[in-house]
Length: 262
Image 1: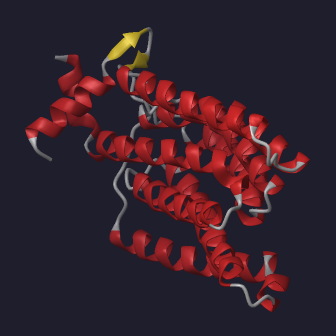
Image 2 (image 1 turned 180 degrees about the vertical axis):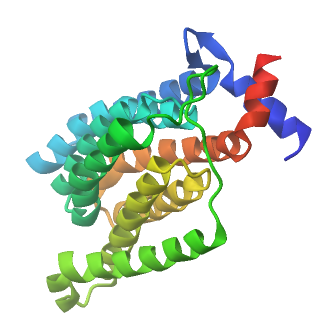
């Protein structure tokens, strides 16, 4: 990584107020504002969404600031990040259930909170740096990476077949795209959480890819005139930016921490 990029990342990590850094403030301010504007537009629009979609919007409006807090605490390697991530995953899962992204809903509302609780209660104990109070990250080896890739493909296909079997009867390419993007994004999120719980630095590649898939999924829906995923698109965009930030921070944690302390 170039020295210029390192300097930018270090500046973004600089605390502005009691553990809150510049990156968090910028991300929180921009996307919370966008979320409020999207929500107000949906309420004031003449073509109002259904009650389920409105409920999803309200939950997403609450979850966007919570999700940003949760994701940035993870990118900062805070040992308390699983607590925020549990709340975020549950809210995000319910939002997806309400707009029929069932694979994302199931994984986020049920499985991911359990995994983060297990990480906080058991896996992360004894793996916290004494001086910084942050979790110690580790590098993923080639064999584990290959097993991960195979598992993502198998789980994604299984989710698509099990949760969306009846949808294959429709001759609608949009429905088919939703099935596969929903399932692959859900499985990537699942394995990203597993990698995060195991403290692998490469977790951010999965978060990056998962959010790209979600953005494509939600953009396709919006392009067909279906506005139900508007708030989820805002949230996924915020998560994508945080994933890029987290990728740089976790890539060489010791180097960044040493420079911040100097």
